[in-house]
Length: 316
Image (cartoon, rainbow, N blue to C red; front, side, top):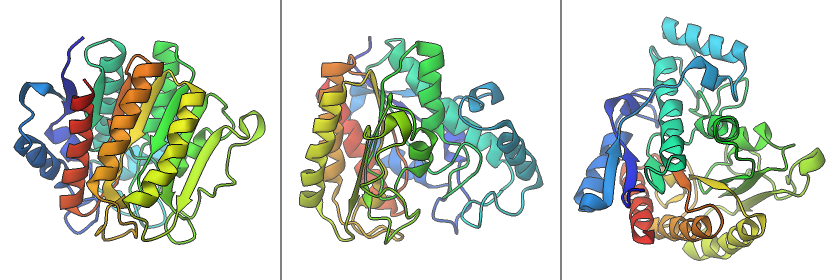
């Protein structure tokens, strides 16, 4: 196994976005990669190339009708895939397939022992539901990755951990009745922010009732508030003993993001990443893949994601 942290990089990832005037613009990838290069991590990181998912892989999470709709709307290149957040720009089908495929490549690299930890910057599209787009998210790479880990690698107890300012509703509702999908999400209270979900009382349904952890946090919350609630996430994961961790580390929870109201610094992301590495080392042979998620202040996302990679490197 390589000791380096695998970071994915390439124009195919950079192509996922909705134009310069949209919060999810096409510059996010390069802003992060420039910051990471300036961090001088040298041989402690290696780079992987984007991969494209096939329809058979998308079908692990998404419905055939929805996949066909995205393909058609992408070819037309106009309108929206939802109620007005996610434009049907030309080529978005292929770009979204590249996000999913790259996340799956990261999963394979970790499972095959090519690396212990991996980071995919333009990924973590956690709002997309099984049958629809939402919140800038076309296909839910994290949801597909959960099903892929089960089908291709025989795992069952997979932990999804999300510190994006927005609730990871596409993952939560996609698995809300699945007791083996471990879900822990600290997010801005849905009474103040899209998508308006993720109340503390939402703990799963049916056989999964009581198995999910939603932690809404007040607007204006700072690192100390995050750290206090993060202790609950660590306790939850230690008890649950996952076989693999998917970490959605959206940077829109940092102070100064243009569309959210939390006030963390990048240290929150560094601390969370370090803690998840320790938990992964204890319970799942160190296996963790991080996905960049949201973040619309470019300086914030560059710093926060770089700190995640640095924490992965420091964990060995």
